[in-house]
Length: 290
Image 1 (cartoon, helix red, strand yellow):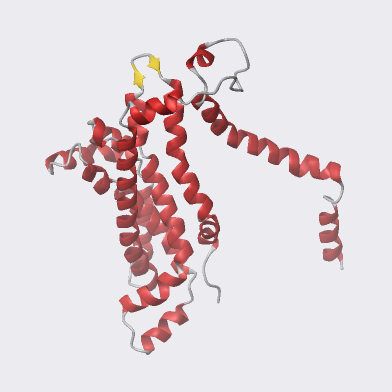
Image 2: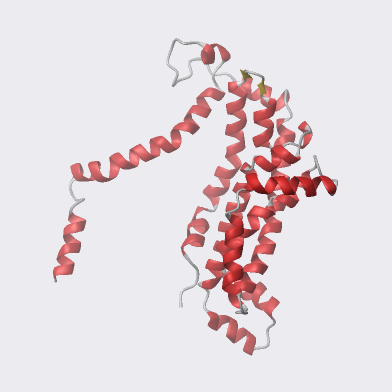
């Protein structure tokens, strides 16, 4: 009875409006404001004319005379459409390759139960902790010797070096939560390991696959160091590198076009998250329960 009374007392604490305001609404409002203010600033800067951007008068948090000049300059006077297309190709292909390798690696480590599987899983996770700022030096030499410098393949083949360890570690935890009895019954019925992986494990692991795919796509979409190092031509650059390098001329910052590029570049990732948020959350919380 005492436990129930304590639980009811804890729930009744938020029954009054002042308590809800202090403990829920105000902290939540502060969090939402801090989270969304950069996006709001990108939007108003995108539609502000240069006169308002450079003026010290007026309200800096509002647009008096909105304009599309910055978006027009970005789309039709720069190579932004090519940068966007390059980013899409590199991100999609890198994500697909990384998921394919990660599924096979995670299944082998978690479901085949071979000696040293835990140490292999730990080593894969430790590989993810190696900073890209250290790896890009030996990778640059390899890319140059293979003749892939200044091509999309330089990014497609190097991005999985940090995508595969993370996706493998994430899928290992998800595969671990799938009951072994399902696999054992399939083995008794004569199914092969590939059939079990394709027909049983992967259908149950769809939320985990989507979660790993979103992470991989986001990381590859926003990657900067490798794209800056391995690509130099404007027509091969990705959005993060192209916006920074092409829209900054010495000490002159084209803030309107910069913010327009950042805003348009962030929309695909935001749209993907909005469509798959339920699978994303379930992929982080677990799979089938026994």
